[in-house]
Amino acid sequence: MAGGVACGLHCIKINNINVKFGKEVILKNVNLHVHCGQLTVIIGRNGAGKTTLLKAILGEIEHTGNITFMDMKDKVARKIKIGYVPQSINIEKNMPTTVYDLFASCICHIPVFLRKDKKIYQEIKEQLKLFGAEKLIDKSIGDLSGGELQRVLLAISTKPTPNLLILDEPVSGIDKNGTKDFFKIVSDLKTKYDMSILLVSHDFELVKKYADRVVLLEKEVLKEGTPEEVFNSLEFQNRFSN
Image (cartoon, rainbow, N blue to C red; front, side, top):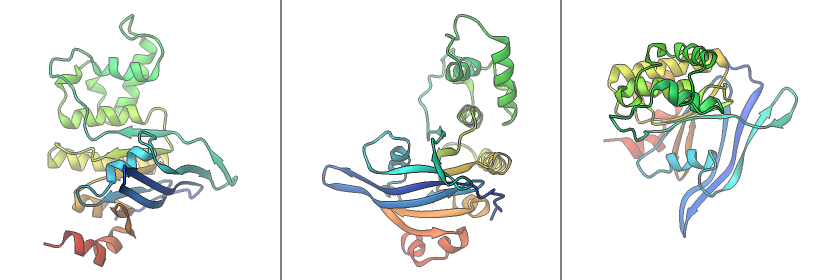
């Protein structure tokens, strides 16, 4: 397990989240504490409500309950900044939009097709460099590999630096080496920036290696703890044993 180097002064509290579609209960009384400097991974079978929980946190679907960002030092709630990398985005292979165009459109108010701002270009290049992606800045989005695209999306989602970074199965469709690289980058992020990271994953081997906390979800939280505690639990064995 990767050791967290959390300052312990920030905590994101997901309080009593409930989601219903008609009469069907999708999420029931989900309560989580996501601590700074830690990678919390949500696991569960298909249909367990993992992506629904992320969408509720992002405010994209109707739900009850709330999310608070607590500054434990001053004992006050502050406005939370959230970064998000989706499971996938639809991109046409012949899309002419470059990485610079996409990134600039997210961080500045000037229409990017009018002119290329040298200061913004350098700022974007420096941010991409943190993820080993600075050479991609002039490349068309449609020409990026799965791993390259995820590095770019990570760079965008962490500028400005969020309190909570949400990653929804971000390595689906990426090869094993790319997946390992991605988890290494995420591990470095939480340590360097003392960031809270909430990730959905099905790769249990990498979860065991990199996660600080694991949450087993099936409409409600069935088990929460260290990777060892969750993977050795009866709740996990009953759902994933062969």
